[in-house]
Length: 245
Image (cartoon, rainbow, N blue to C red; front, side, top):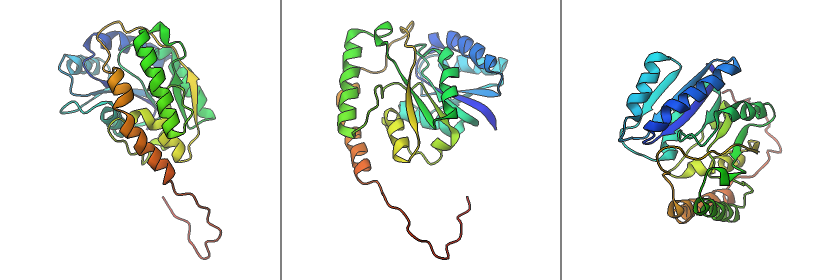
């Protein structure tokens, strides 16, 4: 088993991949650990998969998981989790807006926390006013409906201990709620400020509609899950044998 897996969902990001891999490789090699980078091609229509294959030919630490058709970020993230072999797992976007230099800071928090999720404090550095406002509304709606305190649920720049993801079930759109799902299972999750850079190539896959309104049903499901969570303590277990894993 490796020390670290970096999982990166990719959808039509051919122009961003070369600079991303160059930056990422330099940061990870500086950590002095065994790592892999798992690119999950989510049914791209451009040269993304071909470019990643080229990385693999030059560096065996690169892996490609290619989905047959576009299934969405939650599915790509789930496929990456299933493929990852690291004791720690980092997820990040392929659009260069996440700064790989933040990875050592995220990993350092796993000494005290089970999971760390990024908080893009300076959104003005990388997003338009419309995107910042839609994201702010979406975060407030999500926190109000789900009774949460996550400042930036849309940020998927995160780090996890491997055991957090064991048995985690995702549904379409639920990559946004991974911190909440982990807290429901008793894991300790903290938020940490991370850099947010302007998008250099391509365009965002999300807009106002799928940031606010399309997530409403997902929010109601999460709220229902929290309201139906089993809460009990065993007072006595006479004669019970320890359960082996």
